[in-house]
Image (cartoon, rainbow, N blue to C red; front, top):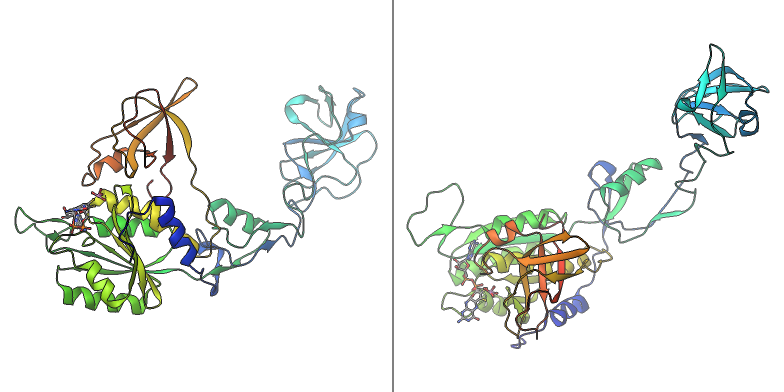
Length: 406
Ligand SMILES: Nc1nc2c(c(=O)[nH]1)N[C@H]1C(S)=C(S)[C@@H](COP(=O)(O)OP(=O)(O)OC[C@H]3O[C@@H](n4cnc5c(N)ncnc54)[C@H](O)[C@@H]3O)O[C@H]1N2
Ligand code: MOO
C-alpha cells in the first residue's frame, strides 16, 4: 500500500493501468439505450434521407424553366409520404410540401413565398438554382458508413440517429454493478428525526447514488453501516460478492473510528489511500477479490469531488467506454483565489462571459463540509498542485460541471 500522497494524475494513471474493461454484452431496446456503451460499431443499413425530398413548402420545378419568367402550370401535388405520381410535363410544376419526395424530373424547389400564384399556375419571383431546397438522398447518412463506434456512450442524439436508420435494438456492454454504502454512527436517514444534536443526515449515499445514476450503472444500495468493524466486514463481504466496484463513504482517514481502510486491507489489497487533491485527500483504492474498491472520504464535498474526478473515469473505463478527456477552459480569476501549494485544488467556482473574457471566481465556502458550495457553482477551478494563491487577473483552468453535477 502506497502511503504517499499521489498527484491526481498519478492516481488516475494507476487506476487506469489496472482496469480491464468489461466485455460481456447484452442487446437492449433503443428506448432504454440512452447512456449505454456500444459494444460494436454501427454501420448504416440505408441512406438517410432515403430519397431526394423538399426542404420547403413550395413548388418543385426545373430551375431553367423557372427562371424564364413564364408561367408554370401546377400539375399536381406531393405530400410527405404521398409522392407525385408521374412525370413533370414541360413548363409545369408540382405543389410540394416539406419532406415530400421530389418528382423524378424536377431539380429544385421554390418556396411558396417567392412565387405569384394564380388558380392553375405560378410565376417565379426569384432566381432558382438547380438543387435549391432539395435534400439529396444520403446527404445525412450514407449506406454502409460507420455511424457510431464501439465504446461510444449513447447520447440522446445517437438514439435518434439509430432510429433514423431503422435500428430498434443495440448491442451494449453490460451495466457495471456498483455496491454503495455509507458509514458512520452519527448518520441518520432522511425522513427520520435526528435523535440528538450530534447526529446529521446521511447525504453522501444519496448524492453519490444520484451521480452514479447519470453513468447508467446498476447501483446496489447497501444502506448505512455503523462504525463497527464486524458490520463493516459483513457488508464488504456482501458487496464484493455482488458488485464489480464497491464504493464506501467515510472512515478512510486516521481517526479512531475510521475502520474502512483496516477492514478493506484485511479482506483485500489497498493500492493507495492518499491523493494530493483538495478536497479528497483520503481516498482509498484497491482490490477486493475480483471487485474494485473506492473508499471515498466522508466530508460531503470531498465525496462528491472524488466521485466526479477520480471514480467516474474508472467506472467509464470499466464500462468499455472510450473515456473522453474532460473539457477545460482557460479563464481569468475575477478575484484573489486562496491556495496553498501541495495539493491540486478543485475549488467550486462560477464562471461567466464578460465581453470577450471568461471570468471565474470561487463561490461559497471552500470547506469540504459545505455541500451548498457545489450546489451554487457551475464549474471547478482547477489549481495545480504547486500553485500558490492566485491574484486577480491571473489565468486559471476551469472545468465546467459535467453531467454528474448538473
Ligand atoms: N488528523 C487528521 N484528520 C483528518 C485528516 C487528516 O489527514 N488527518 N483528513 C481530513 C480530511 S481532508 C477528510 S476529507 C476527512 C475524511 O474523513 P473520513 O473519510 O474518515 O470520514 P469521517 O471522519 O467519518 O467523516 C468526515 C465528516 O464527514 C461527515 N460524513 C460522513 N459520512 C457522511 C454522510 N454519509 N453524509 C453526510 N456527512 C457525512 C462526518 O460526519 C464528518 O463530519 O478527515 C479529515 N480528518
Ligand atoms: O479531503 Mo478533505 O476534503 O480536504 O476535507
